[in-house]
Amino acid sequence: MQALPPPPRPPSPVRRALLMATGGILLSACGFGGKPTTAKPARPLSAEEAALKQKFRGLQGGQLRVDSLFYVQGLNIFDEDGHLFFAHSGLNPPNGRITSSYGADFGVPKFLRVEWRDKIEKEPDGALKRGLPGRAFYGGKTLGNYTVPVASRIPESLLEDRRRNGGGFRLKIRIHPDGPLIGWDLERGVGTGPDGSKFHHAGGDFQEAYIYNGKVLRRGWYIHPKTGQRFETDY
Image (tube, rainbow, N blue to C red):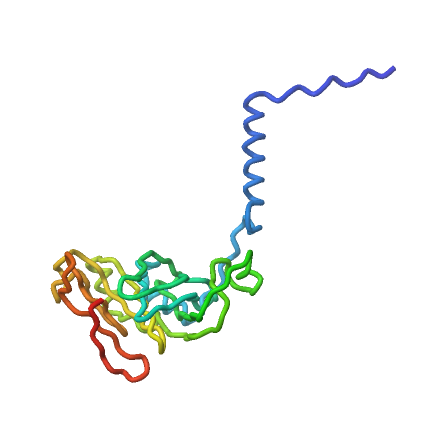
């Protein structure tokens, strides 16, 4: 009779720990979303993208500020690739403003598409069923749908000053019934700005009021997106 092989030895504590760690890595690789664990090879940049990379060198994002001149609901803002850049159920002036941070491959988005609606609906996975990103709002009638350029409008002088002297870049969006307004500036210390505020190179379609300790020290303004007329605001 042929002798049976000896039973396998239990793994040592060190080998057991290695097996557990390896299993954890494999489980993590199959995590939520089913994304591949290996990075996709970077595609060559187009001439436009290479120019943007050079223009915005040293800037991969900044602070995002969003407000509205009227009550707006179901707000979605998408970048040029269709990714959801910002979303909010409802903004109401004058205090309905949101500040957050953002990231972008070329410093700021090339374009932004902004939409809002007269009401919003909610159902499980409702956005995904409609081919939208999971956090996007949907439902009702679309009241606004505008696409506006961003990256091409940011002045070289602001970016060069930031590289030399620092400061936090702010990308600002204000919703007007006739289309979104885009603004920008650099934020530094209080009182360092040319108007006594902390903002430098303020430009674009609007600038919010400068309020310090509850007092309006400088009124805001915006340019009407259709008529080009300038209006002042207290917020």
